[in-house]
Image (tube, rainbow, N blue to C red; front, side, top):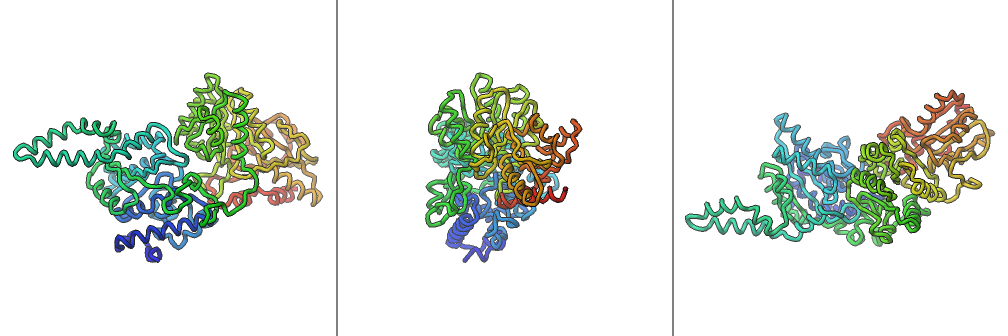
Length: 614
């Protein structure tokens, strides 16, 4: 097996073309088998195998800098940079991260996990080296989907202004997670389908130059008029107008072609955009047919592509999607907005039913929120569905464009709390803390499948201001253990100990109360569907308690428990309040249940805290 002989990128240089092809096959086999067992990002990783090999062959890493945008396509990079032996543990507790991580290897030039950061980071690495007299090459590999994000264009603008020798490799697979949308996608499709522009320009200049006596003059004159030739074949070479030299498109699965293109890009000496076309999921039939389904895959059976673990009911995402579709069928003003995550946020069914009322803005969370704000000004009822970790990118828009104007926009915050194996770049551990500081913001946290539909309906129809409905990446339980499930909140049981679990942690609080009852301790549980602002009913229950224990899937500073402590201090409550949650946001990757247990957010740990504190 050739992979066993690769300890660093230097070992690649001794391989023949045939051996590199074999290595590509071995990489795809290893990646597919490990992801089938552990789960992870499959389609994106299978699509960049040859591109990764070509980059590591042409660059002198780690002296040169290779930055992967998002980083969900870095598996081949990790395997070929000395981590083959530990790749089997990727995304498992204590194993390597599924994303580039500077602490993990000197070959990971920059930690990534969110989209559109690579060009800025690579430019920063390059400029820092230049300031210190270090000669290096910096390459940013960015997907065509990421080019819908504004930060990428800010970086392109700056790099072109500086005339910096930055190489941007555009990995064009016609997708991000969902199929790409918008003008940029259409433009790239034109480039993809008119590759003869470069060849035609080269042939014309060559022919003119060969004319005896006047060839040099004619060639120079033609170059001065090359804009006319450019627009004759392509409706505007956008990247060259920005100041980048555009090369391509090239076959991203042809190692020799990509190596030659990279050498040419380095020789140019200024900013270069190298456009390569790849196939997402290449080499594995199921991922080729359904690359969106294998973007971030649960464990599956390699032979069939089917999930290897049985479903445990509906997820919160699925319940949200069905509930919003039901609301939209009854209210024509309801419109959903997503940032390149139609499938991931559960909006696919609504998009099929009401294609004009589901807007995919691309990877542009800031635009999504301000777009929603504008629509709400005209009476539309927008629901913006985002992952918690990506909502962070639109903090200013939530505050400035929505909250300061008191606009009735609903934010459906998926993947709130610990997300599991994707790790610290994707955990949604901050949203309670930063959202509750915003004026007029209301935060709802459904406990399961039974209360999410009603909470969402209330958020959409109440229309009194901005509302957040936050829920985790988890299965949504149907039973609720409340006689009438009042959505205003309720006390379950009796006792001078009060347990409060945010969202689905309500069930952990109920189980903890049962454990305590078995030990002779009476504890009541408060069901709190609205966690901000704190309701008077909740505060009244706290005022009667001797000991209060809160459990939240969020960082403790500024979170729900922190808010409760602030209110208790202001009102002079006598209760002792103990907050359980994540002490900070640097939470590693592991299964969600493992992370919750490590933070004390399971029934046994909650009960133990009560027993320890009397």
